[in-house]
Amino acid sequence: MTFAREVISRNGLQRLGTIIEDGDDLGEVLALSLRAFSELMEHGVVSWETLSIPFVRKVVCYVNMNLMDASVPPLALGLLESVTLSSPALGQLVKSEVPLDRLLVHLQVMNQQLQTKAMALLTALLQGASPVERKHMLDYLWQRNLRQFIYKNIIHSAAPMGDEMAHHLYVLQALMLGLLEPRMRTPLDPYSQEQREQLQVLRQAAFEVEGESSGAGLSADRRRSLCAREFRKLGFSNSNPAQDLERVPPGLLALDNMLYFSRNAPSAYSRFVLENSSREDKHECPFARGSIQLTVLLCELLRVGEPCSETAQDFSPMFFGQDQSFHELFCVGIQLLNKTWKEMRATQEDFDKVMQVVREQLARTLALKPTSLELFRTKVNALTYGEVLRLRQTERLYQEGTLAPPILELREKLKPELMGLIRQQRLLHLCEGTLFRKISSRRRQDKLWFCCLSPNHKLLQYGDMEEGASPPTTLESLPEQLPVADMRALLTGKDCPHVREKGSGKQNKDLYELAFSISYDRGEEEAYLNFIAPSKQEFYLWTDGLSALLGSPMGSEQTRLDLEQLLTMETKLRLLELENVPIPERPPPVPPPPTNFNFCYDCSIAEP
Image 1 (cartoon, rainbow, N blue to C red):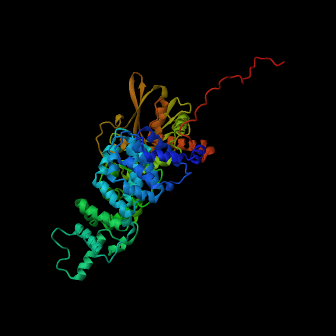
Image 2 (tube, one colour):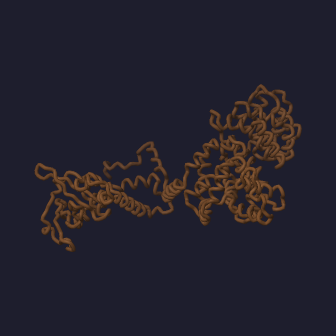
């Protein structure tokens, strides 16, 4: 700033301006002069509005000329962009002097810097134009295939796109979508013959067979009553649809979307309307109400009518790969709404909940920046209601810090200790013992027996019990013993000998889920101690406890649930001190060692 003030105070700008206006040297001197002039002006010491018309016209000449030095046109374009954005009067001069075709020529040169500066001036001219002029300019550019060129040669270029070009494409997208704002802000006029006819076209496309009229041969009152009923079936909240479309936004834009869908996807439109009009009243998805709300939602997600950000770069490539991209996006969205409605088994009372899910589906897919409408359709349809719920749960865990790398590391360190706690609980349960039923050869559960683990965990003691008898208080009353050291393996389900090859009836299936056996050595033979657990809970506790005795991992569903509960509880207790403190993804870097260790105290030196 100090240098700029000094140069400007010594007439530096005037001297540079003279070099540029004279144009004696069209090579390096001119390029350096343009760069120096632009950088001095950017300090804001002198206003862009003070520039003379002959000076601006001369710079325009450098844009319109075919110069040998490739460094001059980008600098001239950049200077004109600053003039256009800073001075409306000079901006009009630039707009009248620089043909759009000339900017298209610069855009088609495979030079990233020149393309970026040409796009910058183009978006500046569009921003400075009136809404009517802007529409004419964009229509002309689209006729000249600018959209296709951007999609093929800039978005899909082999070279990576720069941040500045991304910003200008965002601005161009915002200006394109801004053309929809007048329709979005205009409510339906109930006295407009054209708009009434459009509503009738919408109704007839859904309910009238080609060549037939649903009101043929009916009186005027009957015909009105029939039309009102059909508009209700179409999903309008009122029998007079004009009342639904008086709301702004979305105004007439919602009607435009519905008409586009009915004309460009007639089979999908008819299927949507007829499928829902034949459902139970509670579960029908209202087409018109959904279309109106979906249009509002799309306008919010795409920021239709909002002023452009000065730094944003989040354009959607698919908007340059498709004509009528907003209406095409609506066609995908309305079919997604019907699909999500069915997945949620929604009723009319759930309308807002369904729209929240659809909003999330669309927002998440737009954030992925799909390069084409087909890719968008594929991705958004893959994002089902169940997938949305799973993503919400994952994000909630991330917000709580549960899935942060340091927390996951802490959970891994806690696992061995907590698994030891679960193992201890399982063995204590075995020591308490459980009453089991025996299955006779006739499959009658008519005998009871009791089994428990000795306090020193060396013996399984068991014996028969009478019906209604209380469990034994002393282990001496149990006659049978099985040393844990003789146990060889734990078998479950169909592998157990006492339920093997017993058919596939429902009773047998129930037994499979509760059956487990211990194989052990009896002399030189292999024998089995067979169990039928009284409940699934007892099955999990006993199989876990016996696995622990055998030194095998405890793999039951109950162990997984218990471990997760203990880990969650223990982690929260450990992190109580860190509440509301953000936990970094990575540990802070260890600082480098000092250049010397002279500060260390040498203990070997004796004190005087």
